[in-house]
Amino acid sequence: MTPFGLLSRRRFFQLGAALTAGVGLYTWRVEPHWVEVVCRDLPVANLPEALEGETLVQLSDLHVGRQVDDDFLLHAFSLVEALEPALLVITGDFMTCDQGEQVDHALRVVERLRPGRLGTLAILGNHDYGNSARAHLVAGRLAAGLRGQGVEVLRNQKKTVAGLTFVGMDDYWGPFFAPRKALAGLKAGEPAVVLCHNPDGADAPGWGDYQGWILAGHTHGGQCRPPFCKPPCLPVENPRYVAGEVDLGDGRRLYINRALGHLLRVRFNVRPEITAFRLTRA
Image (cartoon, rainbow, N blue to C red; front, side, top):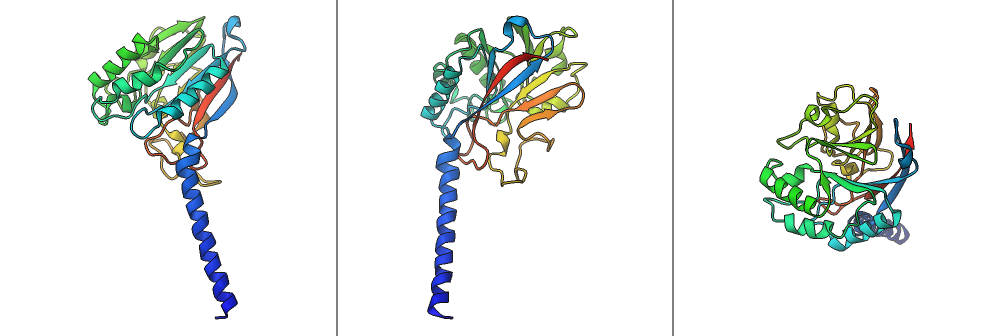
């Protein structure tokens, strides 16, 4: 091999190593904190005229805990405040904890989130039940603390705000998931939006004749997604449920938020998301 060929080969491997290191640094230090504000319409049948054009902001999967920097979340909260939402919804996984050790920490962080002008509503996710997804006392402490801060936590319950009804499902992996109970009493044609942390919950029985939007999270969009490919790992049973809008084909439409926080600080081609919906009449 000529000295020129040896040098070229050595240079090639040096460039490859530098590129690999750069991508690794980007996925660890840059993209996990590079928030994208996704702006889109949310057409709701029979939406009250007073809500036409108002902003509904969705946050999901804050994952307050050891892996997510508080300062990052507080910066994201400042982006939410700048959107001046009339309504704010949080679709679960406020924290990452083993046995409830992060409850007080999560409450201190969420206390810094400015509420929606007309209200703030939330549901719980699997991590809000501890690492077993079954610790109902942990979830109860978190829900009580959030309610004390003015966050309306819906656990298979409904809440009507300015003529728009929000239906909150308890977590799909948790012990109390009950779509029939949550949707009971919802009238045909009533303007409504359902909050369901895990999008797999949309495939469970009990939805009756509900037609409308379901806002979800849980998937984190896969966190790492090679260009033009599907994420290699998703925590859902239905492979369609990755991120963004999914038409369920029965009058229901699903929107999956890519999450704000993370369990592991790594993202590639899946930036953390704040979703700003403009409410419109369908």
